[in-house]
Length: 403
Figure 1 (cartoon, helix red, strand yellow):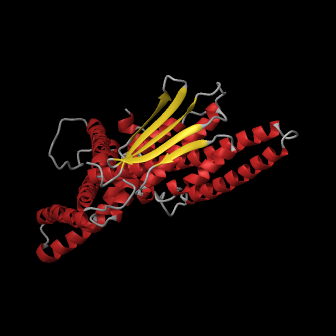
Figure 2: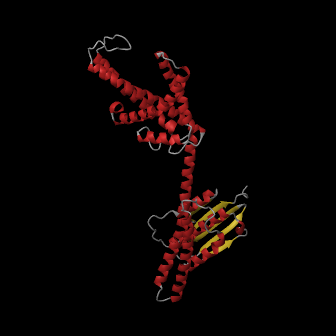
Figure 3: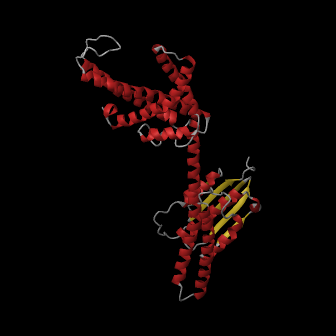
């Protein structure tokens, strides 16, 4: 019932009447052109010219609808009057001829159906009033001739015509709006690609923040706790810990500035931002000052690694050493970084320390390392070895050297 006389029907009627109003300039221009060329005083011929003017007006409207901005205007009106959801109708101008043709098809049917509903709304009401005011008046001319139907009943039937036409035309427009005013398949694909790119950028920034700031905070916290325990008995150790905290904090601030710079709206995350294996010695010094000496075996050729491989390797080593510090405590670790058959191999092992409490919300480090490796078509795994040690291993293919 709401489709006939409810709020939805009223909104659709407004939209259709708007279409009828938009049709009038095209129709009047076409009618003037036809009358100036073929017009005469014959009433039958004039009616025929009016229908021919309608047929000529619709192609003119279709050409107008090829303007890209028309899709935005029509979509906004249709959305406001309940003919489509926010996600179903396009919000941008037409960018392709396929989108323009769809908009033209919508515009033509909007104007045609709007003209029909508007015409019925204007013509039927006076007829209904006359039939009800003079129910027994024999002088009322009926264009279809004599009828035995009571005039009040005929008036009621006429009154339903605009209602039924509005319901049918509104239902058709609501059904076709997503197909004609919605995004094209190419636009949907482009939107999906933009969402995927935004998600990838967000994940990249999340990993950078986790690896850089998380490492620094873990190191600073452990160094500060260790210094606090020997504050009175070992001033030399406290001074060394404070120097390590200072270095770690400065490095963290520099990386944080880099990551926050990527959050600017006018630029995407730069994959070239972030430390590489060239800064590995500084990282190992920070860990040594925090009480985690690292025995390192680095093979030749690391300086010539591609930037993305070197950055990923640094972050994996950084997160692995942070986990040593966080979960095993002040224990020695062994790190191996070597090139073998076009693959960079990373291996980090350490004794499993005493059980340490984990922080709430943790557990993102290992998935983050696996994601970094997967981006380069590599692999990363970590777990106990069975001899009381924990082992982290990663393999990162080097583009152009893998077979």
